[in-house]
Image (cartoon, rainbow, N blue to C red; front, side):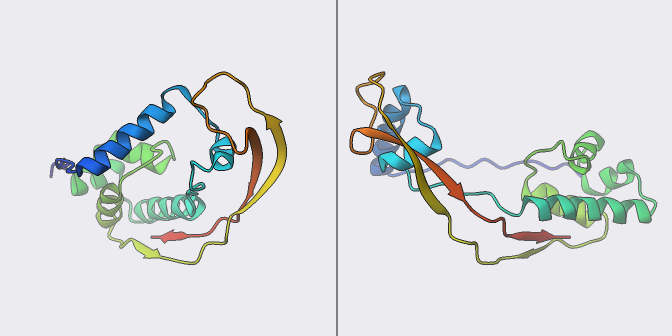
Length: 163
């Protein structure tokens, strides 16, 4: 079985395209770090990626299921249509961002089912730890009240994906 991706035309309204162009122009010369972006008021705050530990634990479980059944990567590859090298990278943590579809094929080929759960995430606490004078490197560089602020995030990891 061959797995293919389907790409669709991205339809955006003229207002959405104008907003994208405005953002592109703003960041053409200004390359803020996350703290500066938050302090400037131009950013909405970080979107943290949580549940990574649970994700990689699930990958290890699927690998253990595969090995317990005596299946080789070639066997799994023939069942799901994902090449052996990609499966090997996935199992060894070298496939940094596998798609959901890849995960579903892989888990299904081992005879298991992927299960998701959603949980509340703790609030992100933002604390200003240092205020520095802004540098005149760019006249378009927005700063909070004429200054740059260095911030520190405190968050706990949550989220889950289980095999």
